[in-house]
Image (cartoon, helix red, strand yellow):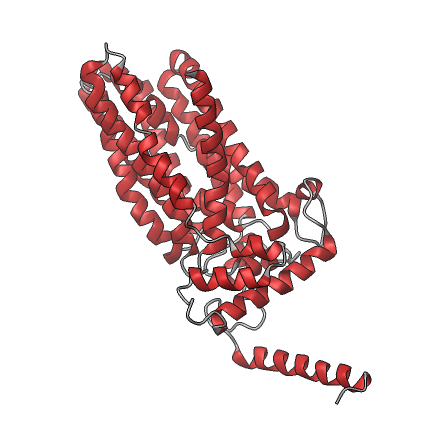
Amino acid sequence: MMIGRLIAGLGVGALSIGVPMFQSECAPREIRGAVVSSYQLMICFGILISNIVNYGVREIEDNDASWRIVIAIEMAFSIPLGLGVLACPESPRWLAMREDWDGVRTSLARLRGMMSDVKNPLVEDNIQEMRILLEEERKVGQGSWLECFGVRNKGPKLLYRTLLGMAVQFFQQWTGANYFFYYGATIFESAGIDDPILVQLILGAINVGMTFFGIYSAEKFGRRWPLIIGGLWQTAWLLIFASVGTAIDPEGSSTSGIVMIVSACMFIASFAVSWGPLGWVVVGEVFPLRTRAKQASLATASNWLANFLISFLTPFADAGISYAFGYVFAGMNLIGTVIVYFFLYESKTLSLEHIDMMYCLPDLKAWESAKWTPPGYVSREKKDESYFEEMAAGKDAEKVVVHSDSGVE
């Protein structure tokens, strides 16, 4: 059983790195935030389904079938996933790293539904952006692990982005969401709730429902403000949860128990709209192409480390400081919010190549980044066609000069 759990854990770890990265590299920039947020939505569905199954098998808790059923159901999802991946096109950015430009063109056309017109201007524009970025990136490095921790004052800020990605993923866990998902039944049972597993089921349902709003907010409001407002909102409700739980014995006051449940529900609702989905969006967006896989691995490792710490420390904290543990999570939410405000750049509607360009600007501040537009764009959504026409004309002129110098007419 331990070996099986180890193998399953390795698989989940690999997927938690690969899926958001694959989604971000394949999705059009206009809907990239929503697409990557759907990863969190599926996680929420998984949590809800597991809660439903646990609720159903509790009547046979004295039978081995109670845990065998729960574990066996994993196969009902992992097998279709494994088969479905075989039908997916390869990431165009991965192909670009290997200079397989025909493969890039085919992959982009397939992802955009343009297989009948693989040389569509939209496809060619994306390819051109990738070519330019790749040429610039190869001037500064080849994407080694050491580069992920490189310090350059006027370079691509690789260390900055590595630490930012790790911090966002770490604090996504230390918001406290899994405190409720892992130990909610124990917490609410100690608070005098008659059916704590039912409360877990309610939290799971709220998590799923509100994540749909998270997908919407990722494209409507961007990345920064949902994370900032969500972090502050979560801080407030965790303070209420911890204060009520420590000030009034929940077992002796039904009102106290109700307030704690409401606080938990409001917290989960906020997490589902903000830090839940957007933590994965950040991992898919902030890293440059040549080191993206390595930096995403480091960020996701930070997520799982934080996850482990919560699952390991919570039983001790519950026995020691009990509901006051909520104050710790409130403080973590506040720290995470401050980090986002001062260090995370707004990447809404930008291509991955333009996001990389934005992070390379030494004088651009994170809190001013929403106003930044790429060269040749009137706004983040609209190109300045005259800019690109002039660039194309300049390239044509260079070709004429080269041909003339070589004696070719």
